[in-house]
Image 1 (cartoon, rainbow, N blue to C red):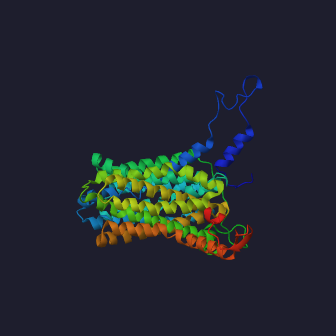
Image 2 (image 1 turned 60 degrees about the vertical axis):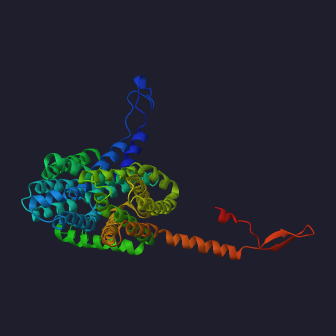
Length: 474
């Protein structure tokens, strides 16, 4: 391995396999079932990465169940309190655009650790915030530094081999999703016990612990590329950094321009998360109204239905690693579209609503894993941070779009309009492929030779046939 080369989970595994089994007494091998068998280091690395991703991104979502408490604490209306959530989302988007690409020119592990260490005092400031603007600023920094989760996703994709990349990324994305889901439950429960400030105080401790976990468990990723000015070996650090950083940011747009597959996967991610957010944004209004009359804690617990998708991430990743990523993306998009039919029945049935939520989340996890498996396999590891920036920016812009559209539509048309919107967004990626399949089969049918049929004299003749073609049967 050359100096500065990225080190990943597969490097650890390869070193272990090369070393062979531990020798037993007298030089013999204890075998795989020996008493001193060593653990697979890949599991520890992936587990630590998944936990750190969940803790990092959770800071954006703590405020959602706390809005009534924040409105009461600062003497403001609920729309003003909602600015806290918006501040976190804006901070996260800025982090995706400006910080995550740095992973292509800096050690990704070190970058993630630094961001989490910066997030810890921001959470402490939120816990002590005397005014709403201070709290909004602190939460914006939490969102900005929460982009450490996407740095870790890029680190995982770069360190995994092509044969195991989908499973590895699926595991880490499962941890990220669990952090989003559990953040609401954690915040609502702790706020009822100790107040909303305790939520952010606990978050500061969790972030510091996550940074320590990453530092101790994860291998370094090296420096894939160095920022340098052309024509100079040792430029001034500041000038070289500015020059290279500008090229780095413009390089993200260049990747989108040059790679049609990346653009398609970004569009697919945009529509998938838009459909997902189209359900979850007005869901709180539905559950708080008749016939449900759920309180804030119960609404937060309802979000645990999405944990089914987290458990499904690894199997989907293995399926994609076997070469079925395109089929998986198509099938799970269809599942998302179909889930809105079940959700439409949940207008007055909590069981149907929960079942539809599970199907929707399963579909989103499948689409997300398939998309990321394809885009990370498309380009080398030195571009994975910029690929992550491009994809996840489109992904979260789609989520914001779905939220805005569904909130307005719910006020105008009610739950049925929301379900129609979600189904249309989820089904939109299916249309190009369906049209292509129809056009291909039409071309084959028009160019196929006429079938031979028996005549009255026992011979055969050509003519139209009603037999199903093999392509149609498949």
